[in-house]
Image (cartoon, rainbow, N blue to C red; front, side):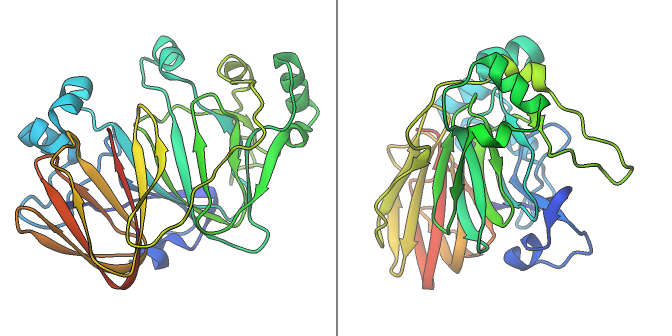
Length: 321
């Protein structure tokens, strides 16, 4: 099992919650994102401790291949780790954006698309986010709404609270709102089309680049009655939140130990602690402490893990099923 060094990203809209949440000290400010597990070129995660400390995630894949990723994943993704795991702290509203699907991302960028999900770890009073259109619009009406600064009027806007979940397939227009603290699981892709940025300026006084026209062809204009993911919270068992071709995510709200059987899973498992602390032990006899804000990569060769809370602990898992 592996822990990695976080990659902190200072952002125009970032806050000061991530470092204390993760219980780490840093002088870096306005940290909007902590990349917990990344194989993105130029931002590859580095093993933090243990016998392979200092080894990058791509090097781990090179060393261990299917034993790390799973045979099907290794055949499908090769040397590319297929998921990107983040914590996001929005002090201000993030830009309104959309991500292309696999076909369009490959055509335009020779990249994977970006489907993602959000788990709301914490939310300030009044925190919100936007996901999807609130009414039917044409591509031309979308474009006009960006030009006249009314695009927020046609998006579904949700107040959010800890435990809320949103699934965002590629093509869905979205924006994380001020006061939201999010755990994000997504495809390994950094392709983002920024649609609207509230006319904010950077430290040099420049407006950030918009990709309104590129986004026009990437957007899914379908309207849903509700863009939230609804689930029944239960203690001491797994509650599946999202199952899609790119990842399956499950929530464990623990007050007692639980064993997760992985013998039938041909995949690595990402274990993300979003609250509390405890231990994780694998079938090979390795045992690691884990606390709020930590992420652990469990290799596909492991047959099972036992999660033991110290009091209580909330865990998200991500794998490719």
